[in-house]
Length: 446
Ligand SMILES: Nc1ncnc2c1ncn2[C@@H]1O[C@H](COP(=O)(O)OP(=O)(O)OP(=O)(O)O)[C@@H](O)[C@H]1O
Ligand SMILES: [Mg+2]
Image 1: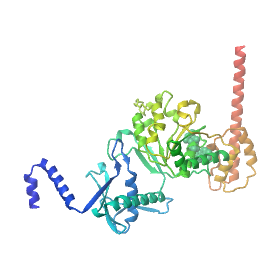
Image 2 (image 1 turned 180 degrees about the horizontal axis):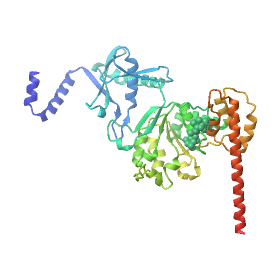
Image 3 (image 1 turned 45 degrees about the vertical axis):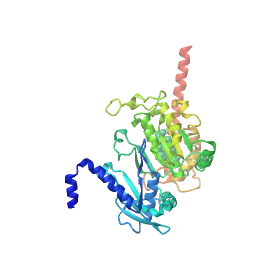
């Protein structure tokens, strides 16, 4: 302490850096131990979370149960292990591999929590350099990956406004657990169409080698179109649950320019679905935002320069270079408004029309709300009405939903019949008015 006090007082501060460097060199030379550091973020043009770091953390959380004392706990629904424990910061964990001892230490490089970057350092004896750097690290990464898959819960990401990105600790995407219950079984649509989509997804999931063989990036684009309430958003949830993929919900109207769009894309992970809902409202054919979208709540104009070409690049330019196994889904109510360049095959590989409720789709909804496989006596009336009038699955589902505990299924079906009859009358009236107008128009022109 005395000597350190003298050193602090009499040695000029600009020398401290050099002294520290040489002390470290000396200690490194004398010490029989080696250190390897794994940062949480890959440094480069964009902050991307390192897969290796998260695999190692998962591995350590499982293997550290015996010798670490402090953990962070997380409850995971629908997982084989309900409580997932992760290693606390500044905790040291000892591990053994083929009789060789190694130590892991978790730490951050900053005193300020908001700017902290996390690291994991592995320490081992120099004699085992070969074994550790090849076999042990490979073992840790593989085990961690398998554990991650076992405890995986789906996540829903939404993009943060770029104003906060400059802070080192801030993320481009905010995440929350994705727990939508929709599945293909509960999705109301024609069975044949549904099976075609499921087949396509299965082919995609197992297509790693095929995509590599034909030299194509492992990605697939879907365009979901159809009137409101026909199940486009529900279909996205069903796809996410079926594929076990995370969902990135991309809000284009908060992105300032193409560069931001690119950076957001790079920060997404593999095995994910990138969704742009209502694409026709987010970008127009010239690539500029619509005037309404440019205005914020106070009516002030917001600068926003994501262009159509930026979006096309987003889909097939740099896309191929970073990550794989990704699905991109656009939804729209007005497919005719979209630029053909955007929806051409190869970009949007599959166009899926979500249509008004057919009788087959109704039967799926009926099964969801009435746990009974047999047909109800009122079904034939509904079948006839659904053939005559357009009603969205959302409206049909609303009628089938019980409003009270004593609400019987028969009563709900009667309500649905009433709604369908009302809708039918409305359509007939509208058709008649249109016919009259046409007649008058014709007389005027004579
Ligand atoms: N095909 C469907 N199968 C099952 N439920 C459906 C279907 N379509 C709609 N629904 C029900 O209606 C609600 C609204 O549907 P959804 O949000 O998926 O429609 P959308 O097509 O995305 O509409 P919008 O174009 O307005 O975004 C859902 O929460 C769901 O309960
Ligand atoms: Mg929707």
